[in-house]
Amino acid sequence: MTNITLFPSVSKGTIDKAVYGHFSEHIGGVFYGGLWVGEDSPIRNYRGWRADAVDALKKVSPAVLRWPGGCFSETYNWRDGIGPRDKRPRRVNWWYYQDHRVETNQVGTNEFVHLCRLIGAEPYFAANITSTTPMDIRDWIEYCNFPAGTTTLADMRAENGDVEPFNVQYWGIGNENWGGGGNMTPEMYAREMLRYHTVCWPVGLSRDGKNGVKAIGCGANSDDMDWTDRMMREYNNRVPLYALSFHYYCGSAGDCVNFNEEEWYRLLSQASYMQKIMDHHRGVMDRYDPQRKITLACDEWGCWHPDGSGPSKGYNLFEQQSTMRDALVASLTLDIFNNSCDIIKMANVAQICNNLHCLILAGTGENEMIVTPTYHVFDMYQKHQDAEHISSVVECGKKQVEGRGDLPLVSVSASKKDGKTLITVSNLNYSAEERVKICSGGDLLKGSAKVTQLYAIPQAHNTFDKPDAVKPNGFTYDINGKIDLYLPPASVTAFEIG
Ligand code: AHR
Image (cartoon, rainbow, N blue to C red; front, side, top):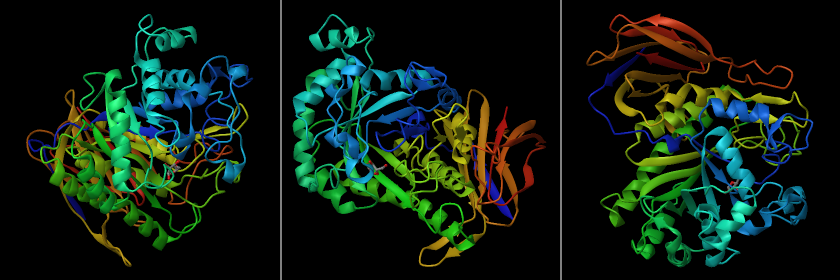
């Protein structure tokens, strides 16, 4: 049996909605053959964006959408993606060596911002600091954010159809500069970042975004604390940074779909390592930033299974199926973010469509669009966005995972907003139901709860033929001072009270 105690008067603060962010890169089928179909497509679309996918994404309130990479961003010149689409250059992109697909630049800055507006997400741009100049990035910010009539670049945006400034708030200075972004040392990166930041200063870079732009520095791969330590030392707080961003892919364990019980627990244990990574980061950053002016972002996270399990059978690079196991990785990770909302202010699951840990799988036909089990988790968790965190203590069984230690078998987070409480509980047991009792101080647990539950066998997933094989069920639960019920194995349950 699991006992969960909620402490409504003990909170780590507000859960930044940007933690419910997503990542979209020009890679494989994320855009071309995925979200972007073009305005002349027979597939129903809004300004070239696949309408069924847009409608689905809008429903889960994606807070942020990161673009254009990833590794792609470090050889991307934003000027290729503006102006008449039939005049845009075709280029070899960063991923060409793997999939031999040429970048057509049909999706560029204006189109991408239209997508963000359609689904209600804030755009987050990753700037190329490896193969374009600081002045190019400054021009990009000016193109996006300055009012029409003020500068030539702002007028160019207006001529390209968007008179209103895009107000792109989040700007990443580079991507994975320890690897695909130039193979830099932490010291080299810090110097480059300072150079770009200084040149972009006049167009609004600041720590808090009050001048319009939040600058985000490139942090470590996973828990490479040597990078974080050396980069922070060299950077030495010389310019304001809003966040330091790290990437953590929990990888895979066995096959994407046909995994066994041992592999189920191993992947969940790998996912749970996110907590340690964040704590390690904050510990190192505290040496250089004791007042915690720089926050933490995880701008790429998710499972990374072997290629070929998605509907395109390997044509779309990195496309993978998404089972209940991926859904549980998502709920566990979002619980970790919610419960660490004092230190993490943004996170972006990788990637939104036809790729790693995605929410949408889309083919090239009108009826070929499905949502994944992970999509449903984001839907069930969306009311945690900008809500006040509620602390919880969980007493539950643990599973020993060989070589990795104990994995707690129940994961929880809770929050309140506008008089409503949301409690999300995942049962990580592969095949056993779990009796869960939830108690709380105060008068949180009263009346009835609207319960949404995602439950299916661990390997279950949706396909174009069976789009609803995994979807949540709903029921009402009468509370009477406490919640006491059996949660099915491999399930995610959301209780909405009030
Ligand atoms: O998400 C795929 C790739 O993973 C990204 O381009 C890169 O940043 C990371 O290594």
